[in-house]
Structures are given as C-alpha cells and as structure tokens.
Image (cartoon, each protein chain N blue to C red):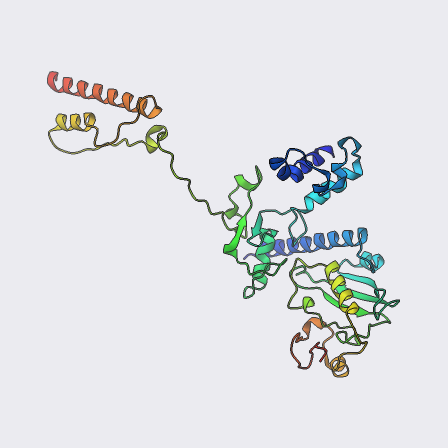
Length: 209
Length: 170
C-alpha cells in the first residue's frame, strides 16, 4: 500500500517542488497525504491511490487506459474505446467528454515508460495512430561508428588500374577530414593504412609475378 | 472475417459492457448522489436492467415525491445510450415526461456520449424535474402514448422544434 502512496505524493507535488521547495498543505489535492507521512493508515492510502489512479482511467471503459490516447482537448481514452466511438458516429465525431470536434488524426498516443512501447501499436486491432516524431537537428562533430554512416565507398572499373587505386585511396575526395582524436578520425586512419598495404602488396605481386 | 473471430469479438464486447456496468454500479452504491438510490435487488437479478429510485428535491415542485427509473442496457453500451423510462405507480407530471414514462431528454438519444453514465443521467433527470415551473403533461401526451413504440429510443424526438414530439414548453 505504501508503495502506491509514495509515487502519488511525489506526482501531486512535483509541480510545486520545481518552483518552490516547500510543498504547502493547501496546494495538496489530497489532505490524507499532506498532513503527516507517519499517520498513514491503510484505508487512507487506499483512497488516495484510487483517486490518483482514476486520473488515468479511460473516460469510456472506466478502466486504466490501455493503448492510451489523448484528444487535443486533453481527454484520455483507450484507443480501442475511442476508435469504437468514432466508428459509432462517423459523421459526427465529438469528444465524449466535452463534445469538441475530434478525429483519428488529431489524437496523440501516450507512451508510458516500459509499457506497450516495445510492441508496435500498429500490430494491434484497431491500429492506434502513431505519434508524430520529428528528428532533432543533427549535432555537428561526432558522426558515429562503423561503415553504416561513414562515407566508405568501393568502386570497380577499367583504367590505369594501380593509379586509379592510388587516387582513390590517397586523395581525400573533397571530404572535410574528421577532427583528430575522434573515433571517426581513428577509423579513417586505420582504413587508409589498410588500403595502403593492400596497394603495396598488389603492386609487389604485379612486379614479381 | 471468420466466424470464430466474430464470436471472440462479441465475447470481448460483452465483457467490456459487463465490466463498465459493474464499475458504475459499485460507484453508485458506494457514493450515490443525493436523492438517487439503486434498487440492488433488481440489479442482482439482471445486470442489464437497473431500477433506480429518485426522490424529488426539496424546495421544488416534486418535493416529497418518489419516482422509479428503469435503465435497460444493450450490448452496445456505453456506445449506445441506455433506454431510460419512468416506471411504477408514480410518473412525474412534467412537460418532458409522457404518462407512459417516456422521457424527452436529448442525452438519452442523439446527445448521448460514452463518457456519460447512469449517475449523470440520473442527475440530468433530477435537474430537469427540479427546474420545472409548472406541473403539466406534454401537449401531445394522449396521441403519443397511443401511437408510440414501447422503446422510447425508437421515437424520433425533436428537441428544438415545435412538431409532434417536441419537448419545448411553448
């Protein structure tokens, strides 16, 4: 029971804590928690836990929202519940709580920590609208490891073969060299040495064979 | 769609209906709004038909009177509204309540939303009764009671018009 009450206390006061480190009693939504943590008894914790849980209950099935979505007007639903409601009156799609106009495109899925995040929500029926994710601006400098995103390239062709090899290997085709000290830089160093040795071996083989 | 899947969906829907009705019943028994009381005996027999006793609010025309509402839920609840009628010996005399118990209230048909509940319907009906200024039957009561369907949800209600089943006071 205590484990249920503890997080509920912290969530209810967290907004106050950020601005003011002394949560006051009158701003507490539930007086049972605010008074004194030592006076907790089971029934009080129960009541508080329920009150706190009901905040996250779907407005349609009254259970804790599964595959939760929130409308732009801020009302929480299970996606299957809301989907069924939208299907019930396709021509008049209104928020069940406040009757604001809503639609499938205008609901936001909520992804809790470690909940359904691992599972692709689109595999479920009915598919929940996906969250819209915008990539942040790429950070300059570090580019990542491996071949996947570095500009490693290979080419085959006919030409003045060994020289082509040289030009390709030793002339840095217009790319900005990576700053020394980064993993990218070391990678490139290793690669260029490797190719240098391959080229030398190849020429040696051509000469002596 | 295969038959088995269809069957599974039906069962799933019935479980959802049942769960929601259970939850509503629990909260209505635990924290009933003033003047509203569930007839637990009727609910115990059949979870899809509830009888609810309503007391006229003090200081209104219905003070001291007791009424009984019958809620019938189908398997589309809460996406479809419950069928709500006054039953029993005392049907309130009110311009929006027909003598057969049918109620002209928009949230019972087209303005229903699944976020409404038995409790909110009861409160709406209480407030509808409380705001009444003159006890009288709807003007078309006799004709309507003779011709209407048993199910009030089959009636085409006109909530703002002046036609046959209008509930406007004018």
